[in-house]
Length: 87
Length: 353
Image (cartoon, rainbow over all chains, first blue to last red; front, side, top):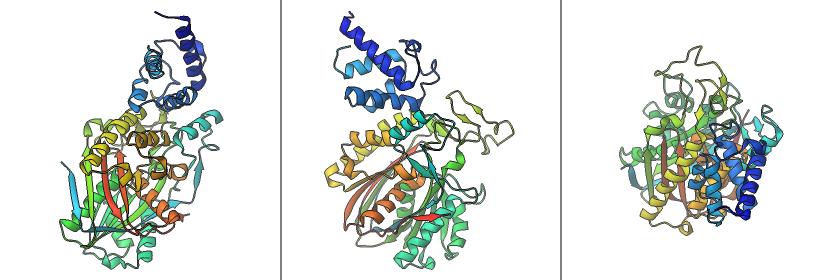
């Protein structure tokens, strides 16, 4: 069940993701993937991962970084799990 | 299993050479925005790299390194028994470049000289060959040349590779020495993934044609033709941080090595973000992992020995330091080696104009 806190966190992740990729947040939803968003290539993905590590003070495992390159829903899920917010 | 222990082979010296011309990733590559360039540099740590002009080949860089090495060690070319040249950027499609280097270096015609067509794992595969020639074939001295001009394989607007790949050449002298310790080398191969990092056309499977030479924006957003180097960045990242890390970790366990036993971990200089992840997974603190990627970039088969040459020429050659080396890339091919270097000779890096 989504709480106000998780919704707010999801939005924060989406906004930072868009900022790091230098695209409009409106272009990002759960289905957004490297195949659908040209800007989300492997180099930009690493920049995004590195940006999240810095912003949230987490050290993502390389395997997690690879898995996050699937779609935004996966990206968010792994990041939230790593941040220990239970989702 | 291609893992061998070579007892009685000494690495006497290692030397490097790079082109004088420098590409600055912050101020060059205007096809990318300044913001993107800044972020890519922060991520990859490649601030600049050296780029060879058309007339300089990998063999020229290795030749310059070999001259500096042999002169500094007081060795004459006629004392060399074998030349092994690891490169993916040879002078010609035919013949191998090693014979050309034999003549240029004025080595005897009795040497065995051959190329190893390997990139980023080339130095480790080259060590395996050089040690085999000494221990298996009974040769006394092998000159291992390892270098690439990868910038010539890239399209200069392919954002996937052009910020990373630079040019460099190296020379390492290996000698039979009954008093030397073990050099342990393990090499791995998975050709099932060769298309993750390759040049699709220009060989005999797909010769270069007008069509393959056409530069266009590719599905991954990179500008290049089929005659240019393609890299699936995410596949290579995955390979490096899983397969390579596992091989190195297993190797360390088998050899009963911990990071505390190792003075320096010399990794192939792939990119900063990736190498940081690899080093952290292997539990090596940053001070044990020398980098040259900031100013030379990823120089393919040269990157490990170039980093060694740079490090030892700057810091001085410590007496007896255990080193762990790992190279990984095209093939896919990867490997790991360990040895104790004892006062290895390393002249200053040569710059070639």
